[in-house]
Image: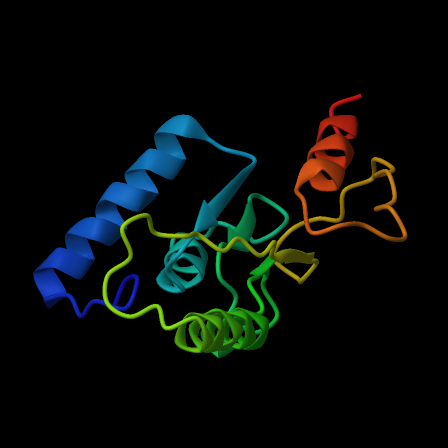
Length: 145
């Protein structure tokens, strides 16, 4: 299963082959994936994680316990969705909105066992921030300095 979709064995084998061929050809320092099989495939090919290649998951779940990657905080996403829904109900807003709203919540990096720690000093996040994204953009662009 990749990204929640069941795959036929021949499709899974082709995906494995394509992924490992790409890793061999490109020799990346690290890869960011959305499927847990990547770790099994790399180890099966004799590629050591994180010594030879870093591996991070875009949406950490129990399937990838111990991995490095992004914790999207599904409980917080659910709470925010409920708040938005309750707000719509209280304002008598029903049906498909004319102009949909998008709610963005930042995930957080989890340093697991599948990537080497970054030796570079990362600027600290501000102690307090508003609900705007300006604080994040200012912090993010400092990373390149």
